[in-house]
Length: 154
Length: 119
Image (cartoon, rainbow over all chains, first blue to last red; front, side):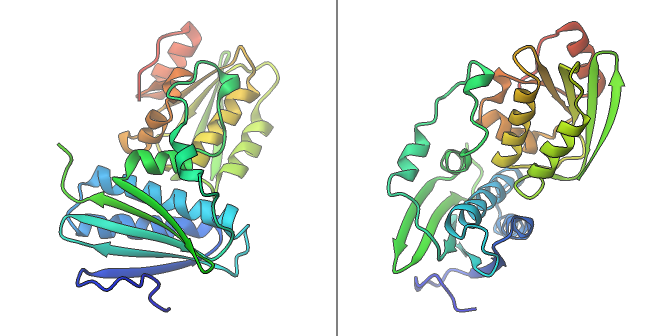
């Protein structure tokens, strides 16, 4: 597999790829969680990074690749001194330009069952958990770029 | 993922026998619960002591079950690990569902309309 990241760096990097199938997403999440633990991240934080990777991959499979299993979802993990930088990469339909901003505006509380959303919470979770989240779409390649500090939060 | 059901008076307990309630298992979970729900059942406890990972699609599936129960329905989750409970906490589900450490506590609370524990 061609290294998809493109950013020259001395920091160690790992590349992973799955077919666009929900049942394969756990492989990505579990692998990234173990890498985060190896880098020194606390267990609870590494679990939450696993959750974010799964959410991003699920979005790529459903909304970008539209369940076309022949397309790959790729993940690049870069372990820097202070943080882990993760790119979830697809080559399908790009997200709307305001999708990240819109997902931040989720209501803080739900007062009744009728108002509960049963879908569309993934980006909200990712932005709640990760330290930074950025989305780039260039030349048919879409990247959700997430970083998380390795050290325990105070 | 499999569901094991047990009736305790008016409370239906559904034990989730699987480690992940996520995008890959949520559709089957919803279909299986729908098959097990009877019209008269309005109080459901999910025993999630075997579940290690829940994503937003998993939370959405639980919300779908809550909606199946109707306006008078009550839903409790028991035995969820702190890690797996975090996604329910982030999505503020403690406002509309009850959370308990053990299944027996959840059954008692639903039978008595007890107060919830926040995840």
